[in-house]
Length: 295
Length: 295
Image 1 (tube, each protein chain N blue to C red):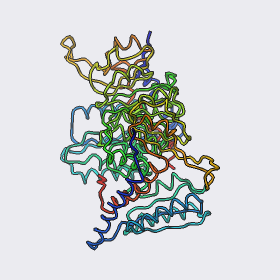
Image 2 (spheres, each protein chain N blue to C red; image 1 turned 90 degrees about the vertical axis):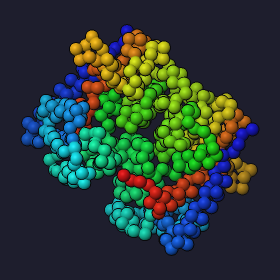
Image 3 (cartoon, rainbow over the protein chains, first blue to last red; image 1 turned 90 degrees about the horizontal axis):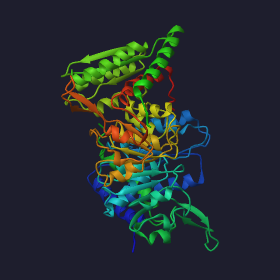
């Protein structure tokens, strides 16, 4: 019988931990952690994501600032705003909500953020330090997965880990992190992607399988072995007339079939998803405490 | 019958190409590429390496500057020198020869180099941009291996690649590069290391095997399959009384046994080794030409 790796449960625990830590800071007369978000334009999904982040800041006692800029804001004005936030002393970290309007060069924008305030972990300095196994802000989804493995006591050392999908925000950093000499790490990692010739050969031999493809129910029961630990990062809306919303959310894994063979598996929704905003706030708290040793 | 992947030959070709390119630059009235090296103290091996780099600059028509600092130079003085070189307009790139004396924090030093002049590719900005598949200076050994594969017309897309060794300067970047969507890339990559439980299982299924362990003749014939492409990064001195020098150089691969099953294999010496300094100079030439698009 499999055990659920519930991000819903773990995120609640982590939120409670942070809430207490912030309360203790404030009780000692210190200012709370402060996160800002820059939102350019008013994309629906981005509004939702940013709103969710602000709300969680409120819940945990973080200060938050939402900087709204018009959709036609020039790159120059955005870069100026970033420089302002870089310099703002009572601000611990900030994010620029992606995607940005097409007239703005997203790489240039990310490069402009002070790495020490880049709590999204997207600046090349943070990515590079992560790849060099130096202290850094980990991007939210990989950091969330690391915590799910750690807090559920899943041994990773010496395990065969297969990562499916090589995106910059999930697959690639996960493959790097899990191979490193670290508490959650020391796996023999194989990174699979669209050019992989025999995907099932690899998924079938995985002790730990991380799937981040964005293809609903792509991994079927015959593609995994007994006892596998499954981390399903995918989340796709699939039409479902029986639901009031008209859709349901599916992961990259065909849940019932794969769960039947798993030792641990993340549900979708309620698995990796709830861990991401919590991880962003954990980075912000780290920034507030000056926990990262930059040199 | 295997074909040798000769870095000795290829480096000669690449040097000739660069020499002509620099001559053309100079003929057009432009200044030649200019590389500087900072050497702190007088470690024997470091002297040899730096001397080799300066000599190659001379051969190819590059300008070079060797900055010698005493072994007891303070971190502060070294950082000041780096800032000077960062600002020097007629200098395209520079390196700080490692290792540094123990009283100096090497991470701090590398972080102080302007990434645009970091032709060693060790600054986190370059490592991070590499990991994000953005234009960057690749570190010398991985860059040399990429060129060996490319110039010998070895197909990598869809191949099973196994990298043995997870060092920051070879194994880890090689595993990242070969998995990316790039001309030399698109492999399914497995990164193995000291915690890997069944190394031979992986090496035996590799289409392309990159070994960077530093253990003489560790990979034996029974550990590879017929037709494998072998990149041997190791180079270890092994005692040999029959040689005037008293030693011979061995790779990580037991050459005769493994070569007998290989389609391509790098010799040691004369394989990966000669490619590294050439790659450093290629980065310097790129810097001179402003080839890297940083945003």
